[in-house]
Amino acid sequence: MYRKKHGGGLMQVALTIPERLEQDIARFAERGISPEYPARLRATAMAFKTVILERGLELGRRASATKGMEAEMSLGYASMRNLNTLLRPTLERSPDLLAQWEM
Image (cartoon, rainbow, N blue to C red; front, side):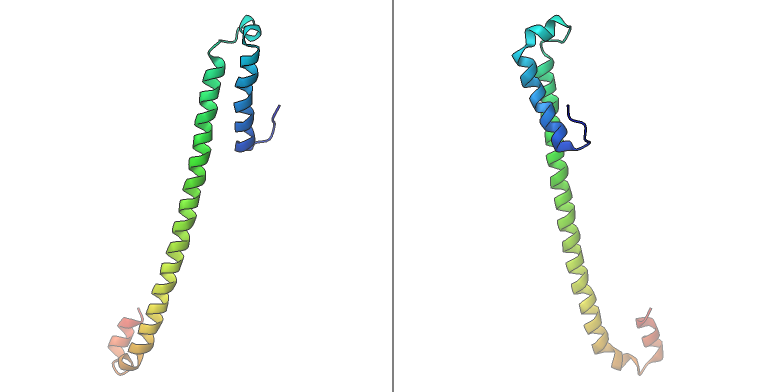
């Protein structure tokens, strides 16, 4: 029996149990397990698999979005440094404007 808390391993076990149950469904049915149980368990395992895959895709999208945002922010900061380099000599002639620029 699978004991670790890992989604992929749990999913694999959940997908193999219905196959084993279907092989001896008559014997399990005698002990009170519903004949529909393997199909329900398989459907649940497939739903679990879908959730795991969707979660992985979502994490990938979030990581990509974060990297994209970091790249855009770097470009923005570089633009601000360039703008500061260009404007500072002019603004230093007017202390009021320089004070506003540095806020």
